[in-house]
Image 1 (tube, rainbow, N blue to C red):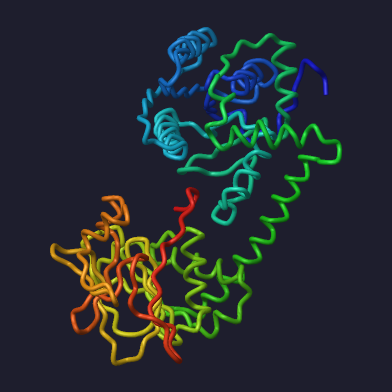
Image 2 (cartoon, helix red, strand yellow):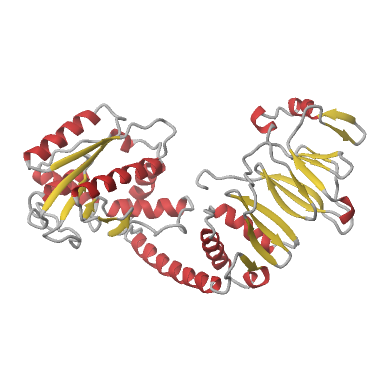
Length: 427
């Protein structure tokens, strides 16, 4: 490759097209803009620039000013969106808002193709990020050279090029760009992967980052097979009821795809953790169990797994209470309640605390729930979520993971309450 020139990936647009470039002012998008105004200036009919000013850094205003001046110099329309976000916004939310802006302006200008400056190193980082944060099943692994987002055709002409190629081009042509100091910080997971994983892979002659592209391609191929098998399985499930027995005969990963596709069909968006919880329930020896999600219940009733959407089952509601009429597994405010008791002990009530609640402890007498919370140093926000289990004689028999007066007996496991584990990458 010549130092002064870069060959773009397959040009995904026509000479009659209106093309938009998402331009941040960083080295990648500025190099792509330089190419579009030099070597590739005859490949499109019209070029529009989209710039998002996040207002996070002092340089943001200068970047915006420079891009506007550059666009005016080349007779290119520049559309700017000021996206000033508070600390509660995630990178994913910011991306969604950027693409909403791109879609709106693309429609206004009759844009045929939106270009972004993602390169091969971005692809490697994305593959690792998805694999290491458990996001690999819900989306294509890595970055594709082109796809459709929000009705827009998005192309990434630099995707076949390494960051070093882009740097050499920038140096040879003296392309002006702005450095984002936050890219050097490890606060974001992607930055950490870039600085401490990808960089060390490049340094080791026995490791090849190009292998990640093969992993992504192989994985997507296998995922396609799993998805096809899940679709085939669900062809025999016309309603909302899945046969527990039939599902158990499928390999674990196929169960994951089946349940994910089945829930999506019913407007439920499960995370991987929830799907694994559902599989654990289905594979257990429990005859019944309920798993609340998105104001619905995934119900296991002996040989059937089905969705109950007849009521509201928001597990975040700290005022919620419900009856347990039979042995099974239940979720409540982030707690898991496993019940295996004789029939004469039902129904049980699961609820949160009320004024005056007290529990009778063997050999210790009666103790108020409020005092137990204080003695155990339970945080105030947790006290309103902790499940109390009340028997059919209206006696409190268990308090979260703190006290449980029901012990296992012959042929019965009793009452087991545990705190659900969570992961920051789970939704």
